[in-house]
Length: 203
Image 1 (tube, rainbow, N blue to C red):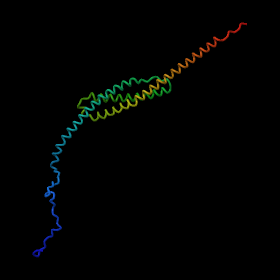
Image 2: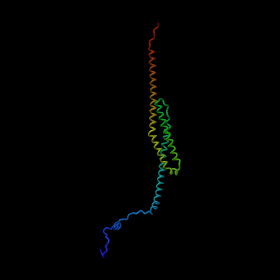
Image 3: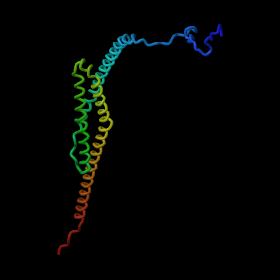
Image 4: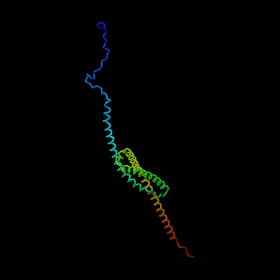
């Protein structure tokens, strides 16, 4: 108290902290909204260039994949031509022939689809393949899965059916040959017995 006047107490008042400035620390970073348009202008061309490079690389991969699939499709088409159904000899062979026909029909559908996709990829010009690289990539992926299914599952099943059909045919031929030998032996034994009969005495 000085001269009858009360001095305000400064013990409870808070002074602004200058630790960040006096202590040598950096001031807090503040995002300047005026710099956002400049950042967008710099980032956008980089993103566009990266997207164009990615699409060009995928177009090139699609072309290479299309060439590899074309060879596999041609080989599968040639193998399909060798899958002509044989005439069935029995009920079991008829069932196997029906199963074989169903599998051959599925292979025909896959071959037709693969040839259409491969022709579309190889005959189109580069700008068209560049624009449609995503769709072409998905189509080539489906064709690759179908070809793997045909080579890994359908063709082995068809080969087993053909093997079983040939074995069944050979067994039938063996039975026919054995029956023929039995008939020949029976005829020969009957002829010997007839020749060995004593002549009847004359009266």
